[in-house]
Image (tube, rainbow, N blue to C red; front, side):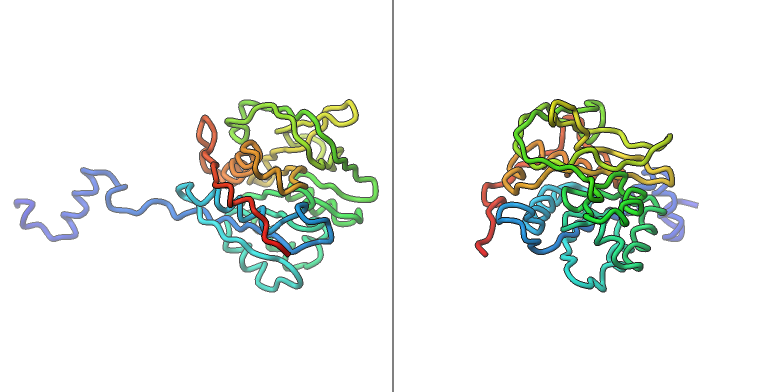
Length: 276
């Protein structure tokens, strides 16, 4: 029987066999990334500018195919939080005392644990990995791989050399050694044993090379990344910083990173802070 007389459905099947499945089926759904920030936390203006920083990160990720970005403010009870996390493939935390914040609500912590169990990506920046009290440290390390927690935590504002610990890691594509002024947390709490983290960036602090950014293949599946810098909003103007964080997001949600680094150019207006 000539093809012209075949039922329409069978013709479609034949077309798929000839042209391949991509011509009849849509591409994979986009990976949903939730950027979670908070309002001012008492630090001076131009520091700990969580909302403004996440808006910059959102602009860097917006052009990337296969990524859908949402920004949320997690002040107060944040009742909708667990549901938003449940709908996400990856979450970025850039907020005040994030380790304490994570453990402050059982439903919130459970949602992050579910995200981790299904292989979701987890990224944390600066004070988002922090807790003044030691109690929340363990739960945070189990998810993000590192924590700036407890009364023995160390931090310092300085201008220093920052080196790439693993030039072959996708997160460091297009990133070279730099000199920066920032407040870095260091001597962080990391998991031990066979499942420790891999340094991504190291900074010279008090004569020692300290890990200030790391990647982690979680033993239960999924990927995590942390960067203890970004105290000063001004540092978002650094191409290396924007590229580092954006590429870390892609790596944690298991999307490819361009070999020569992600394009993260933004207009000068993107870095301006609103007057408060």
